[in-house]
Length: 415
Image 1 (cartoon, rainbow, N blue to C red):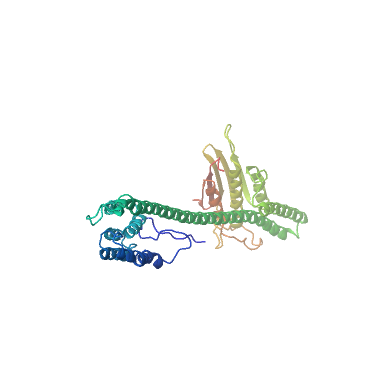
Image 2 (cartoon, rainbow, N blue to C red):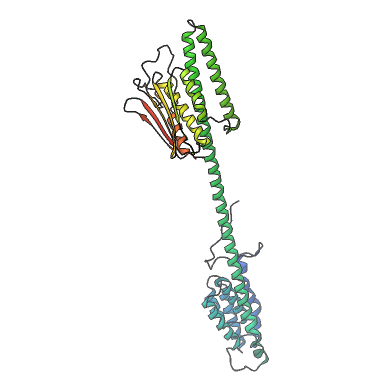
């Protein structure tokens, strides 16, 4: 629900807060005027002691003047208070209360309050100061029609200011809560998008590598099916093994969206990964150096990223440089883990190159091997994202000799 908009506490003409059920504003504005005109003016016209002078007509006129001035007390409270100084006690009290309630403790208020006390202490007509009513006014009038309205007005002003400050605070808190809720929702959306991207990257790595190897083995089995039944059985066994591995990794991804720490691929799995590529016909060499004595091994996240980067680089080599020689080097040094995957030149890349570890389609590839493996174009992006998420860097591009190289550096203690 929208928060109510409150006027600033600095606005002196803002309506004063009050009870939920209030009379219409015109009624509240004109009620004192009507009361004075209907009740006090006739009394002043018939009672010489009811007014600031001893002349009933003058008292009635001054009382009527003060009553009419009260109608403007909301717009001009100070001027109305000054005008009612020559009127009766009740119009002066109403005007003084209104000024204190709307302007607060200002210098002008205290000046007019002092003038009001003098007006209530000293009658305008000094000819008769010994009457009982004049003596009573010396004590009662300044208190009842001067001090009491002043205190009540200042109290109403303080209350109104407090209500406005609280309303503004509530509005501010409501706006802050709305912004916090929007920030939380945006954070959740970003987290969900990041998780979807991570899952897509994991799916790409698993499916691209395993299915590419399965496709290559199936092509080799298709060529050898008539000549060497033993080779066909061996190829089918490799395809089954790769399919089981792909299903296992996909089950982990689809089950919990992550891989258990004790089952996650790591540096220990690199020899198996390289051997699978060798069985598919790619000449791959692996060198792992370190860590030196006293140096802690890379963290699980770093080892997992290295495994996936090597996996994607080898997949791209199968796609675009199947006849190239690939060298995989992993060096664990004190300043970080350095990974290099370099393939030798084999020819000119076709138009569908993935720009992965080897964007060239080698001329030595067999024309009977079937159509070129599909490429999604996300290999380099995924590898760079993996390195960047851990605070590392990854660079990929052609080598001066005409091959292709992927070089990455990852901090050892990345989470």
